[in-house]
Image 1 (cartoon, rainbow, N blue to C red):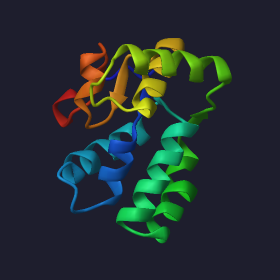
Image 2 (image 1 turned 90 degrees about the vertical axis):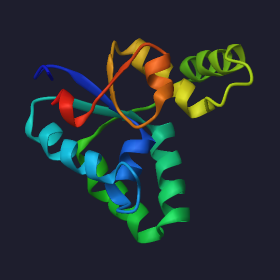
Image 3 (image 1 turned 30 degrees about the vertical axis):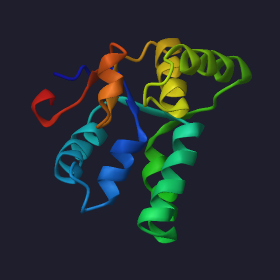
Amino acid sequence: MLNNSEKIFVDTSAFYALLDRSDQHHKEASALWPDLLNRTILLVTTNYVVSETLRLLQNKIGFEAARLCYKDILDVINLLWVDEGSHQRAYELWLNLGHSRISFIDCVSFITMYQHQIKKAFCFNSYFIKQGFETLSVKAT
């Protein structure tokens, strides 16, 4: 159950699933999104996730999908800008995780979530769970 004062981190995987109807998680993302918008929940992401999302959308779906995401979806998201210290902590985490498939941007997301005491993520990426975060699902709402 979502608490109305919660902060939810939104990952690239959720943004992409919302916009690509062929994505395996599109149906679930589309079911969750209206509920998230209708609650008093602070939706947040980082400038790194925005950059990754725009690149992915532009390459996979096209420029118009990336523009739509930036213009419309990101209007309802609180953007957290990653500073030098957070970038360095994320780099150190990425190094410590070794040769796992966790991306540097995921590490930036984890560090941001730790810093802002965000416990839940709207994502379709199991690495968030492995780092101790909860992820949303249709059943969780």
